[in-house]
Image: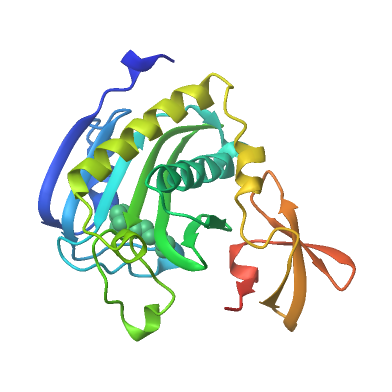
Length: 247
Ligand code: BTN
């Protein structure tokens, strides 16, 4: 794939249910292509991971979905997740935000506080991911977060200044496109980069699994996305619903 196969086409709406829902509908109508971007100021039904709601103050943050047609083997679903997290990590680095880490599977943290979340919805055809809707919520100029979100931050909080959201979106999408072209031509070591940014890798942290609380050490991530943790000297693999991080 080369640069001409990836063309940005924007739809901007002041309010909608969810940019992911909108993008999925475009795909259903065969109107979504690699580079289609839906962006909004406000979502009435913003979707988070694991069926949660994604809330965001109107006009303060970036909420958008990118459509790509990755034509990747289904087994590589998690690689896409890693890819998107790496893009956000590298872009925040370019914005001079420091100590950015990826919290498995793909939350983006700054000094332990969440600045961005990702929700990817894939369409599978046969053994291939034919299309992906990559939904990103990035806290930009919001400074107050609810008590439930005491562990949230934004670009404004980190940089102590207002950030131009259009410029931010453009520069993120440029990085995304350039990384995607590298990734598709095998020039981006997604697995290695992801591990290098992974929160908690090799350091003891408190977790909760179905047996209760324990002190564990993340050892890595399997290609299927399961997190590998050293729990009392034993190697355990967890999927997203089986493990909770204790803050
Ligand atoms: C999470 O961390 O739980 C994932 C949050 C993803 C939120 C974004 S905002 C744009 C896109 N549209 C949605 O409905 N959700 C994603």
